[in-house]
Image (cartoon, rainbow over all chains, first blue to last red; front, top):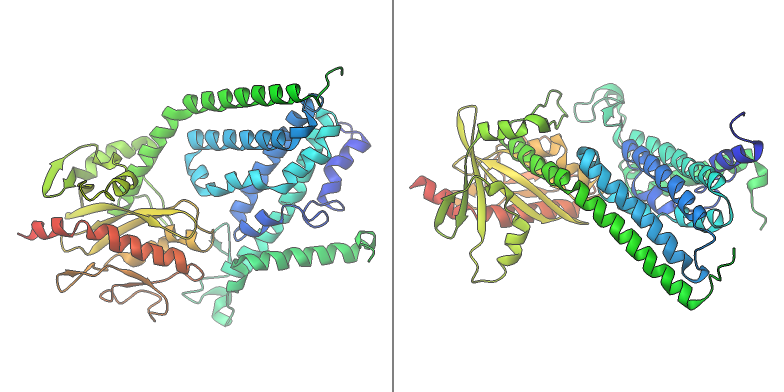
Length: 215
Length: 249
């Protein structure tokens, strides 16, 4: 890649697979359970986290030499909260419909442990450009899992994708439902997200044995 | 860097500066965006009231499409012929009744001496005189609210429900077309007495063909939101019963 050195592109690519925040570092599980019942909120959440984590990492990285270490967690929290409130205000003013749809999810970004984790583990010790790449990379890795989980949960739980009826109409019994297929209502409930994430972890580790922890 | 970031005085100074900077930034942005945000909220209320009245841009069977924001004010003035505020026995006309914050009114009404202001919007759709009332209650996580359009016998002609933070795919489904449409045709009155409408599980009527049972089929996995919605309709629509009785006389 011309734009990014090998070391820099690793920052983006690693979190997508072998250092994925959700499946390997097991961070950000809470929001992965809460919002993946449908595909659309999953995608919007992923985009918002990319924005907040990318910019937040840069801000923290720029301030890394002046932040007093005793209150660094509070400072990090304030930076996340500020960014999230700005996103929320901008959405409310210029994309009101979208902001209504997201409502609580935007606020939930503050509690996403991936963000604090990257601030603490990476941005405090690296320059702005590398921190930006790391932030975007980790947010992408998080987003990929959200989209996969959201895809399966919406498809199997409601028979829809983005609200469109993919498998036919469950009330009118058309499409797949005509031959006796039923939606799995359990997929809509949060515990199924954990099981889907578990299956992803299983597949990932069986393909790359190096990821399996020693017992 | 020569700064000693471990000193207490530095830490406190940093905290103070940080709070000032962030506070100013956010307050400034809020002031900057406030007119736009308030306008959006006004338009949304108008859109919701019109939706309950049946004025919308739905084309497909699952659409919940509002009148676009740029023309909603004109449409609102066209369809809503009269807005009134009911306070005790007094009924006064007020063209800004839709801006009354019914959450604040409900809080004030806890003081028994206070006569709660109840906004009511009269409109015409397809030649029928309709009355739209706002409702507000509690879901599982946060507030739920809506608008109910009725004819003069308190039979529902249309509703719009919304929520602040119900679970997507479960409680949040109250704002889906298939749920809201079920309410049309149900009546709040049984033999002239107010009875409310329940969101009921296992009423053996998933397509909601029975319209005189005061029941609407519940959403799977959203028991508390559904119960909250029943309670909201029971509590808030009941406030308007004296007005509807006075219409008959």
